[in-house]
Image (cartoon, rainbow, N blue to C red; front, top):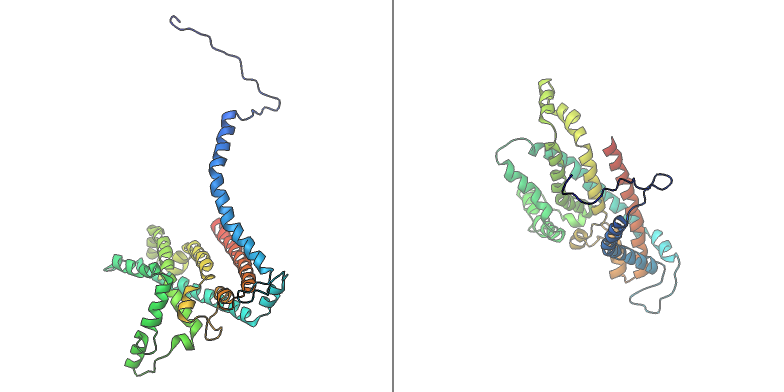
Length: 314
């Protein structure tokens, strides 16, 4: 056509043997640029996680006591041997299991029932939902002080006043039932989280399915058992996984209320490590406890992640 200059190259591109075209220089440059941009975050993450882990492992293999500078040198596995044969360690491990298990039973069980209740229409539903979630936003230290001084104090606590009002003798809960009281306090803190997750899951349930079950004659109990509960299985698994990871490291509530006592009746693994390091000044033994806690936490996390994956695939 007139007015057009130049020629069009109709020669097909040369394809090497095998039919694979190597990536161009621009693609390689983009990949290298992406790796370069990601490298600071990766390096920071590695330093942040690996350096403390390596130092903890190093101190766990050495004799290191803050009040005895003459006690030093390589200890081998003696710190681990002393920790694993210490009766306090077995007690702390049992208390950790009871604390985590008790809180999970209360928060998941009661949270499921309250989530179903708060899903029903009633006057002031929005305000009630805000109030039931609000304890989750209170700091653990403040929550522990609130329960210790306002609710459970044996002289001027709310529970003591209620017991005296009906002619009963007030109970010093933190001294007589330390672990059960801690379970109650921590459950109060984590119950709103379970309600929030489970209520969100219930609201995603198809209303037509519940209406069809109601028209077929299914009562509230049958609907809860055969429709709502199976629908909540994945949400319950997620609640259990997240709560377990955080409950293994409960510390502030114990430190503020019972300080691990009486004796070691309310000492969990996290508080035992703290007591070894900062109360007994045994950094080597505390580091060994930290390594054992890391192993236990990773085993539990791997089991929970596998359970969540199976639930999601079902």
